[in-house]
Image 1 (tube, helix red, strand yellow):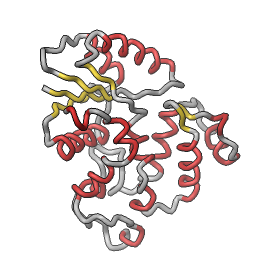
Image 2 (cartoon, helix red, strand yellow):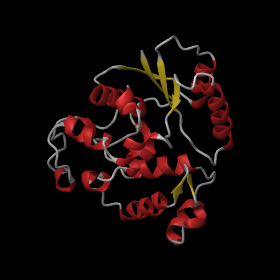
Image 3 (cartoon, helix red, strand yellow):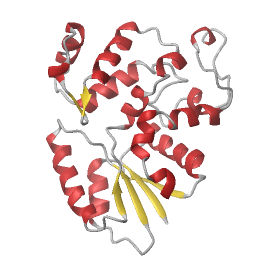
Image 4 (cartoon, one colour):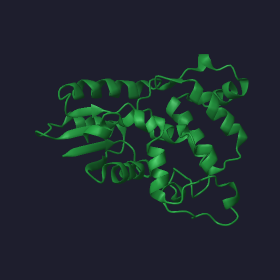
Length: 226
């Protein structure tokens, strides 16, 4: 059996279930462990059966020491069964959406400040952390200063939510917004003027998202081995 364990719930969990359906024809057993602590606890108790493989979608955030400590524990636990417990190289679910190459075109976002910030912040994202020292743009630096508790994940999540702030594109609810995964067109007539999706079927849109650079990096060998 092939498992995919994620800390994501709601829209993030829906996303991984869509990955399972459209990329792996429902061959995976997708389970949400609700939090990074939930992932750690589950792996701590895990003794894989012969032939079982566990892919672990655990957020890699290197400027949050609590996450770093849990990640180090998780890496040590996974090393006991290195052929069966495989950690995916993922920053966070929101980064997948934020880095999608057609995000701005498809959503038709006119939030020009957020679009500019997205470009600057993604350009400074290095080894799962925002390298502030690489940013020279003052608007971006002031935006980052506005976070009371600096965290790469918190910033990526906020920015991704700002750029998917319509109900049909939202990634904050129990499921991905309908525009991500349903056949076109689910938009009201007044909303269509900003839509830049050139795909007509939900499957086509999802496959484009899943074939984008970040997802291909995260899934890696999983695409050929699962």
